[in-house]
Length: 102
Image (cartoon, rainbow, N blue to C red; front, side, top):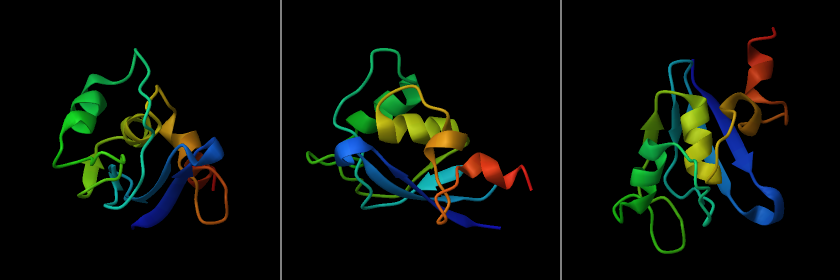
């Protein structure tokens, strides 16, 4: 089962769309990620952000990027340590974590 999820930051710092399949999360091409990066961010996410074939100068994804966890995907998008189950929202605005509560 694939579910579309979104992550939007305050003042539009980031605006990303992803697909969650229960095994991982794919951040879709065209998503905008935060321009800032915290000092203690996931090193995998940092390296991906530095690749010009992945992120352009306006911090827009140039290709889909798949992560094994929603939290790593959230860190990649937000530029900081993040709980993916809270950052990623369902279409109804509820956090991704609300799926496991059903």
